[in-house]
Image 1: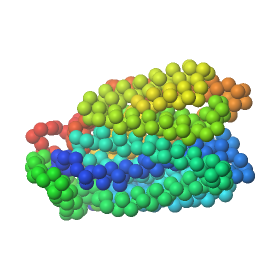
Image 2: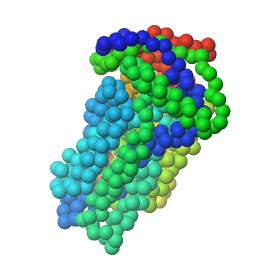
Image 3: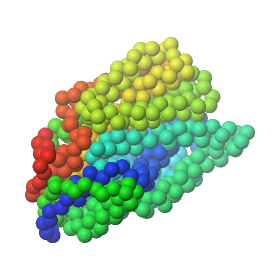
Length: 493
C-alpha cells in the first residue's frame, strides 16, 4: 500500500511496550524537551499583540498601521502554514528528531532577524520565516510526543503541552511591561529586546532537546529496528530503576513491511480514501479553532488600546492567557476519562456560544469585563483547540502522522488564521473611524459560528481514541497484521 523500496518484514512489540510504561521522570524529559515549542509560539504571538503601539511610531518603531499589524500577523501564519507542509513531509521521511532540531534552529535564526528589523518589509519577511519554523515544529513535535507517550496519558499530555502556548503568552505579556516602559528601556530598543529574548529561550530548549531520542515507532518502520529496540530497552531500564518494579510483559505485536521511503502522493491518496470522515473532522476542528484564536487574539491588544483606553495591555493579556492555560491543564484529563468525542463537542460548542454572546454585549463591555468574558470563553476554547492537534496526530496511520498534522494545520489556519487577522485589522480600522466598538462584532459572530460547527461535526464524526494504542486507532499502512488478545484495530472512516 506504500511506495518505496521494501527492506524487509518484521514483527515487533515496541508499540505495546511503550504504551504499558508507567509515568516516569523520563516522560517529563520528553514534555520539557518537546513541549516548550508552544511556549515559544505563545511568546511570539503575545509580544506582537502587546507591542502593536510600539511598532507604529516611525521614530522608535517601524511606522506600522493597524492594518500593517494585521498583515504581519497574517504573514506569520502564512509562514507557519507553508513551513508545516514543507517540514511535515520531511519529518515523515527523515525522522522526528532530525526535523525537530532543524526547525528549532530555523526559528532561532528568524527570530534574531526580527529583532534587527530595519523596515516594514524586513519585519514582514522575518515574521514569515519565524512562522515557518514554528509551523515545522508543530508537525515534528506532535508526531514525536504521541509516539513516545503511553496511551493512558496521551490525551492529557498532548492537550496540556499544546495549551502551554499560554505559558508563553503570560511570559510575553509580563515581559513587555518593563520592555515597553520608556522610563526603563528606550522605546526604540525595548521591542527588539523582546524578540531577542525569545531566541535566547529557544537556545536553552535546543540544549534540552538534544537528549530526546528518535521515535522507535518511526525507526522500526523505516528499517532501523535495532536502533528502536535499543532506545526502548534504555527507556524500560530507566523506568525500572526509578520505580524499582519489574514491568509487565506484553502479548500484542504488529507485523510491518519496512521501507526506507514512502511516497507522499500515495500516502495522501490512501489517507483521503481510507479516512474521509476523519478528514472532514480534522478540517472542521482546525478551521474553527484557528479562526477563533487568530482573529480574536492577534488583535486583542489593539482592540484594548484603540477602543477601551488601555495604555498598557500586558496585565490584561497575562490574565487572559493564564485562563487559557488553566483550561487546557484542568480539562485535559477529562479527554482521557470522559472521552474525546464528548469533550471536544462540549468545549467547541460552549466556547462558540459564549463568544456569540460576547459579540452581542460588546458595546457595553469595559476593558476589564471584556477580559473576564474572554477568560471564561477561552478556558473552554483552549482545551478544545488543543484537542484539534491531538485528533490529527492520533487518527491517521503512523507513516502519515506528521504530514497529516501539517496538512490540517495549514488548511485550517490558512482559512481562519490568515483571513482572521486581515478581517479584524480591517474591522478595527473601520470601527475606529466611527468610534463604535460594535463594528468588530461580525468577526466574533463568524468565529463563534465556525467553532460551533466544529463541535457539531465532532459529535457525529469524532473518534473514541482514549486509552487506545495508536496502531489500533489507525493501522499503519505498512502493517501486515496486528496481534492482540484485548483490542481490535479500528475501522477506517
